[in-house]
Image (tube, one colour):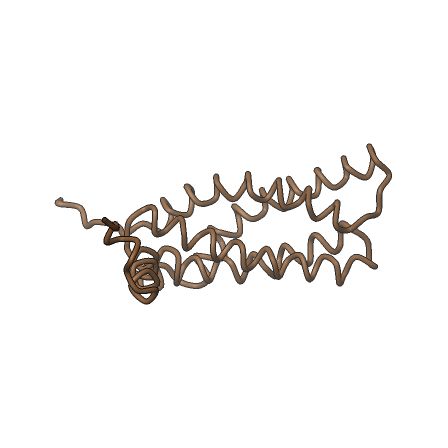
Length: 156
């Protein structure tokens, strides 16, 4: 006897996965957050390696600023569906403040790595930045979820 869930056509699985990502609950938001974060992190990695000739700190700062602006906007519109509630500028200011904490953390981590290992390997440096960013990203998800939440009118 076969299990009916294992014999469903592939399209049903895809439709189910897409429905899950399109939902409005915390898990769906987290999935979208990870997808946006992964995409902008991949762009950051490309920028970091491309700009590494200017030094790891300038590459980190330029890559972080550009991809943070993009990530803040994608989180506002896609992850938290706050486009009608939160303006572009508000998202950049609030999300940017959180991004600054990440930028400071990655800059300190890069300085530490360079001091301890005396390495100039952009892939090792990016690996460290990815680890720090994943940690900060978890905190950022919680904060952005709160900042971009729907506001209920007061009963006053």
